[in-house]
Image 1 (tube, helix red, strand yellow):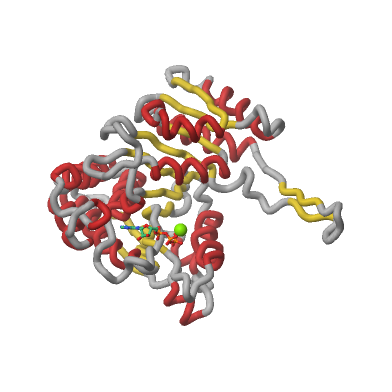
Image 2 (cartoon, protein in one colour):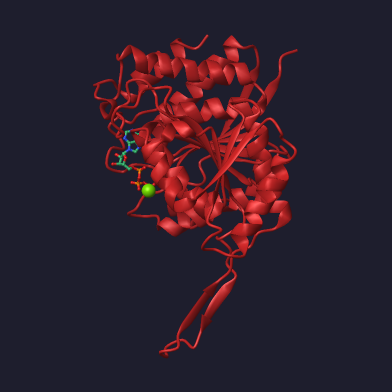
Length: 355
Ligand code: ATP
Ligand code: MG
């Protein structure tokens, strides 16, 4: 009997609604080619339309509704005229992240053929690494406060929280994923300036590295690391970072490889106790929504990451190969890639190339 996976599909808003069918088309084509089954269930929540109708982003029972799924395939949420930014984030994605303990944010950074790259003289193959961001603690704690408000002694304090459990599990994820790649882990630090939490991070990196004697480990302070993303992107394989540093690097990385329309992101619970969420990096892009010109590759690549997470690694690789081949052919490209094809035409071409 073939494996069967239950996927919650949440298209969301704007171009999320346009690129999601292409993401679904690709993963279904992969399921057929690699002999497994996908049971897809679509949900209308986590969208501006749901917000307008119900005054909230999710139904009360969202946790029980979603927790039994093997993964969540997410489009994009946000519609500036009706939905305040903090509501779209705090009202859905951050709840998923926290309640489903998606403690890894994973972003591949890969220069693809035919994508206009902002870095000169870089070829596909030069840039191919992963940013692994700690997604639950670190600098984004809500611990702190204000003192002496309204006086000239006004003082503001916000703490960083690093737990051994939290730091070790993200480091372990990074080292494990490096075993399937070039066995090279780079740690983002700032232990010369942040004198308590970052030396602790460094210590845990050194401790974890002992378990992986065949893995090359290096570290850079975050300031020079950002410079090296631009100057020497070929130096990296797996880059692991705290919540704040990872946030910065996971935007900078994809920016070094061209259009935002192709980049994917995974919010992952590696234990598989709860569903992980896969989405394109881009947002709902109100400026081009409804025109059928959005690039579906970010959604399709997110689908490939999801298949990989589910254990269908060959199928995930086939999807990646299909869009790379399509890009390399230079035909059927969307407007952001310099072509005239529609979202659907590019999606269909990629799905047809999956085998
Ligand atoms: P959000 O607040 O939801 O992140 P945003 O408007 O800040 O939305 P994006 O939606 O990511 O950011 O869009 C940024 C720019 O990139 C827009 O000009 C948009 O047209 C373009 N863009 C985003 N996604 C795509 C895509 N898939 N294909 C083509 N262009 C895109
Ligand atoms: Mg945005």
